[in-house]
Length: 533
Image 1 (cartoon, rainbow, N blue to C red):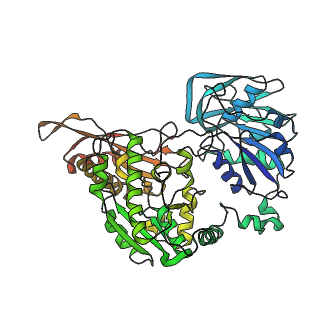
Image 2: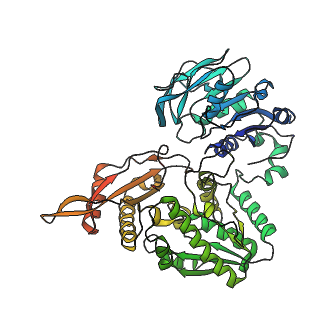
Image 3: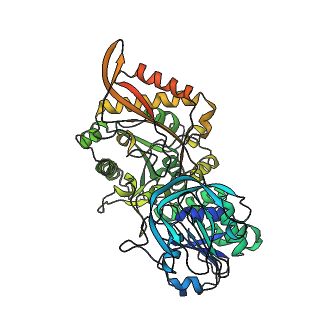
């Protein structure tokens, strides 16, 4: 999110390429505080020249501070007299550049970790003595710069938070912006409002309805976001024709309906059945969108996709091939329809995991981000590019999409192709499709369902010995993946009761003849990701 007005208080966020840089901005916005994201090497004079900047946050990053070409920041920022907060990599970088010491730890800290708080005050004000915080690092600060004092520790990080109280410079090893960090919003509030004294835009009637807020990509009001996107789509596409890839998920559905409101019949919604879709997905699409006033075109392309994937086992190659095949299909339709634009339901978490910023690490290529060719003749328009999944769901409700869409579980663009580890075949696709159907059916019967972000089956490229019908069997094991999340940037595995897992296991091994073993994935994100590939 970028703001361009120099009269409103804001926090400058320096981007070191971490997954959660944009999420910091989102959390500040939720607190009513504006922010602007800058590249990590922004000169101190640019920060000091903007009197609306009340504080600076150094975001996390994927590198080690000692690494070759590791991103740095202008140390003069620490001498500007405005508060500074370093998060994770930013915390380590403050120590490294000002006389402290950072080393690679003997053990990493990924996911929830117990934080012991040494004393009250500053950024940890009113957090109590202990909190569970979200960690994502191996490097750790082992010696502080001069005039700094430790504020908190964990089992593997004895300096998990520090401060130079006189200069108002702080660092935390954990991620307060992650939804799983207890009291994380309070840490950001303590910094932005308590220490930086940034005026909240929601508290200033002159700011609340200013033209700047009208142009914010991520507004607190779904109604305002809807109005902004429709206006932007009209200005971007104009009287030209566009196609949109629609998958049945909430992202592509919201993108379709918003752009349809902007350009009407000039939008053609293209649903591609890749042979890697959910159980009876094509029938679902026909039923849901038959009532909507959009031009819907269904392309049955299972043979084309599965043929292109034949013999391919690399996760990244599979994603690229699926992306290219989608592009081929869309290009063919666009040529027939004389369309100039390709609209996609890309959201922010897709973009950041594909390594879109200068120093960010590519975790995996999302086919609608990393799979598009440079010579694509269509102009790409992504109306949801700066939004998180929970915000898209709010928009879905605002524009009155049915709950079947608004609350639908996430499904990856590459489909079942990345839930089959290794080489993809039609037979394996059917196993995963049926297994995921069973998992979803059983979990929908429980009270757990409302808290589940994703639930699906993963097929491994191995077989294991079992006993079925008093005979030895040699069949596939299936992995269950069930996670809870708010924004897809972090996630916890769901604590499913054993009796529920047992019901799922019995159904899988009884109803799918190729399966004889079921295991449950208890990995959080990080260190894992939502998907296995």
